[in-house]
Image 1 (cartoon, protein in one colour):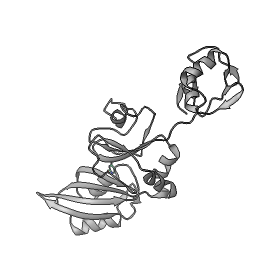
Image 2 (cartoon, protein in one colour):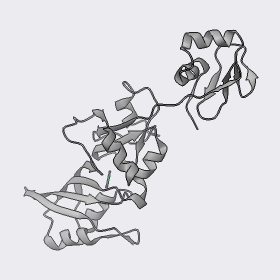
Image 3 (cartoon, rainbow, N blue to C red):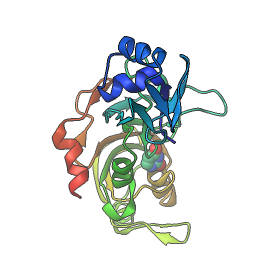
Image 4 (tube, protein in one colour):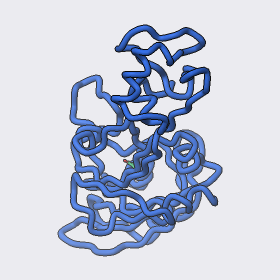
Length: 240
Ligand code: URA
């Protein structure tokens, strides 16, 4: 379903007239929606679905495409609305972005780090579709010391739900106070994949942060903050 907006906003978005001028056109009986002349203010239309004409000429509104990277803190869900009323990633962007956008893929409630958001459904599909295999890099803090045989199992693939995970790049960064910090890059996005992979070799994931998707990096984006993607970052997923 397309976004629903007031008729005068739709006309302004199409570039045909300002909102004020559009209201006047509506009063003058020059505007029709789906072939019916509009006789008063307050009519709403759906972008991409309703047919709007001024003096019999079709006008088309387009929603500007938005692509952002957000540093999700722990304790936020990556759905648009949560059934338990927990904070959502929408709460972090809605003050500044007034177009309806949605998260691309997901991160667990407890996981922090990079999540992309957009209003471009085709682009979102390209980023998440298994066929395109966008790489995703994470830092994970594991309980216990990860052994070399366990590390190799993670690299080769782990059976999850009867299907082996595809080969992953994984390096031990640091071992400290009985915990292991690892960097892991996977090319799939199965539910709770990183947590379940390490659990399968006997290590609970105490902390998980996504650092990178494709060529998009978290960099020094502060927790809870977002930035627009560059055109190169957007195009990277179009070319895949
Ligand atoms: N893997 C997980 O286990 N959790 C995430 O949020 C992302 C990847």
